[in-house]
Amino acid sequence: MVDRKKNHRPVRAHLKAHRSRRASLLGGAVLVAGLAAACGGGAGGAVGNPARQNPDTLTIAVAAPPQSLNPALAGNGDPLIIPVELAYDPLIYLKPDGTFAPGLATGWRFVGSGNKVFELDLRPGVKFSDGSALTAQGVADYFAYFAKAGGLGASRVQNFEKVTATGPLSLRIELKAANPELPYILTQGFAIGDVVSPAGLKDPNRLGTSTAGAGQYVLDAGGSVTNQSYTFTPNPNYWNPKAIRWKKVVVKVIPDANAVLGAMRAGQVDYMISDSKNADAAKQAGFEVRTWPYLFGHVQLLDRQGTQVKALGDVRVRQALNHAIDRKALAKALFGKYATPSDQILLPKADGYDPALDGHYAYDPAKAKNLLAQAGYPGGFSMTMAAYNLQPGETDAAQAVASYWSKIGVKAKIEVPVSISAYTAGLTGRKYQAQMFEYGGLPMYLVADQLLNSGSLFNPFNNTDPRIAALMREGAAADDASRPAVYRRLQKVLVEQAWFVPFASIDKVTVSRPGLEGVTASPRSPDPNPVFFTAAHG
Image 1 (cartoon, rainbow, N blue to C red):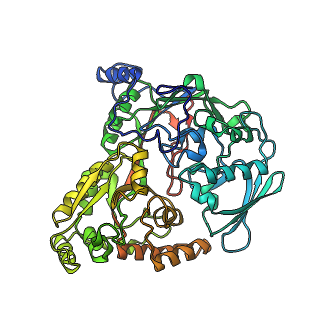
Image 2: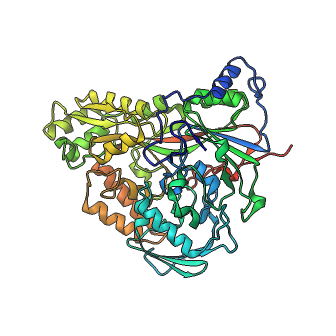
Image 3: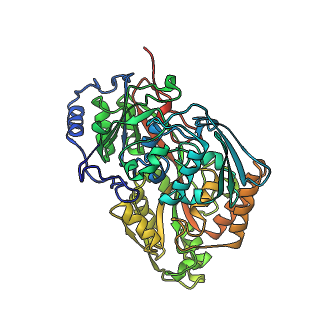
């Protein structure tokens, strides 16, 4: 695999990821694609009548390179996880309809009550791409590596108190704290269940530029260029060869959404994760455009106890910031018909989402000013807000929110980190008192785990509240039937305490070539998995 910056240098988490979507990292082929599209030529044919999906090769465009090909350092969710999904089978598959299916594990269960003991039965006869065998001890060793690797999901595996191989193909996980979503985080979107082979674990530095999984495909290093293009070919050792649908899958990094659409018109790309601004143009060009609720846009008020900006420690100030923004106008201006206003840090239909809280913070600048005055800040105050384009348009959203706040005297200085390493360093170093963020539509347990837990990346000031902590513990230990009610109570406290300034539920937009099937999703499975994609016959 060729690295344009330094040959064979591993792609490491936080260091080579998420180049700005405003950067222009377009190779010659992409420029040709754009020119061909502009001239109406190329393999795509006339505008509105693009070529159908090639049944042998699937080409996916992503806006940013993977943080790493190493599952333990890859992060989670689209687009970071796509290369890992191709090369690593998870222990449990999350199907497009949100239900679970066997992967490397054929059976799983919680033992007893309280969601703290979990057992897995592994699939017999599985070999990794390097020929080594899947064993329970190998999975336990992978978990131990994952917990120490330093990736974004490490804390979830650090919650494993003890992992025991109870047989050659069976193991038990004992948790420090309850986790009702353990089966969910062992699916493909989180990488925790994407087991690396024993041989791969012996030299983890190589995992940044090679693959060592038991998935459908292996990386073709000779046909790949770090941070630009990744080519995958079928894994000859795959346990279910009939499931392999493509002779080749290519993942291209193209930061500019307009350039991707041009490449699709020229027949060089088959699938892309788009933004709302390009959706209508893609439809007019004859491509399949699919949308569904995906993210909740919000400002995280990180300094909620007023450590650096004393004003943020007052709940009236945080409530004022919520009343100061016009959610309906924001959603429409930023995302058009592909978003709806929201006051909550969950998507509709998620466990814990409460329709009774919709509209809790009506747009009322006069009330916002009055709350500021009551708190002792009639002239407003200043703070620093980070805005990094992990999702397209987050900097635009930050500017729009800051504009509303300026009308009540609150000055939000927006900082745009130059890289993901600078961004995460700024968060952990408490450089920002707030940040714009668009977070995926996950169950409340997982949202709370990342956004509320003391010491997490998104709670760098270690804010705590006894009511919030108690409800998090209660929800984690509850059974499936009673958990949503607990999380609705948690949501109510979060809204009333105004730890966040939510503003919209935002749709995911995907664009695919006619004849590409399997691009489907659901509330619990919001990221289409390319291993389920197929080309229509005929």
